[in-house]
Length: 128
Image (cartoon, rainbow, N blue to C red; front, side):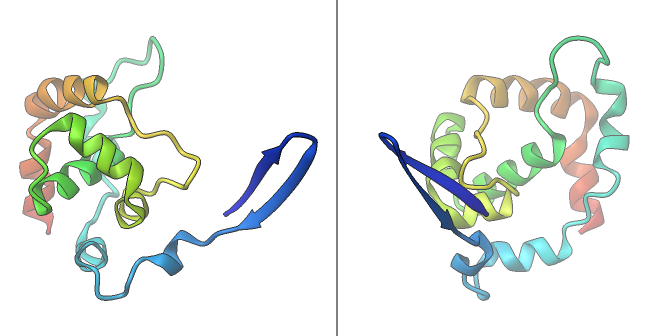
C-alpha cells in the first residue's frame, strides 16, 4: 500500500504491506483459507435495494462478524473500534490502512436487519 503523510508543505511517501504484519500462524489466516465468499453478493441480492446510497459490502460485514465471534467481541461499537485499530483484523476484513470502518450503528442495522432476514451466517457456516 502506498500512502502519503502531509506535514505542512512537505510530503512524505511511505510503503506499507499489511500482509507482512500478520503472522502466518494467526487464527484469521487459517480461517481465511477456508472462507469462500464468492456467492455472498448473490445470496444477499434480494435484501439490497438498487436505489439510495451504497450499503456496506456484505463480505466486510461477514468478516467483521467472524472477528467478533472468534475474539469474543460482543459489542458492535467495540468491534468497529477493534477492526479500526488491529492490523490483523484489518487484513482479514480486506481493509487497508486508510479504508474506513463502518460506523457501529450502520453495522448494527445491517446485521440485525438484512443479515438476520437472509440467514446469511448459517449459509456461510455451511460452506466452511
